[in-house]
Length: 110
Image (cartoon, rainbow, N blue to C red; front, side, top):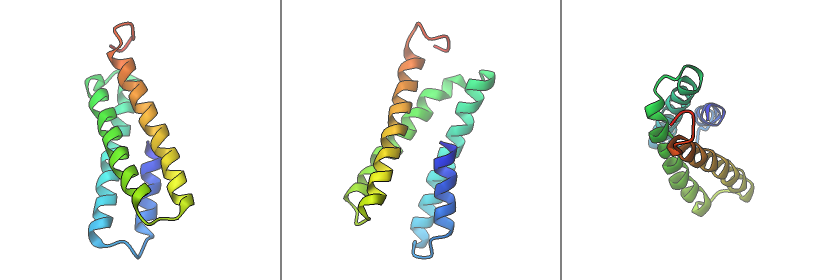
């Protein structure tokens, strides 16, 4: 998550063609993603904020479904769309796996 969102910040900062609102949205989504990454790291490393893992994963899924849809149906290059569809699939898949793991009563974290 951190890699994806840090890369998004770097790309938004270097894109002179983004409007002010698009830049603000990029930074806001990146901040949400980075906060989520910190929560997941804290939950995995020290067992802190385990109760936040499922909401963070759900937020990540929602972000990727919404943004992925706008990217796929937007006027971007095919390569850009392909890369983001793969990133979305990986992120959504990992988040869904995390939610199912956290809700599984046999899971050590459940």
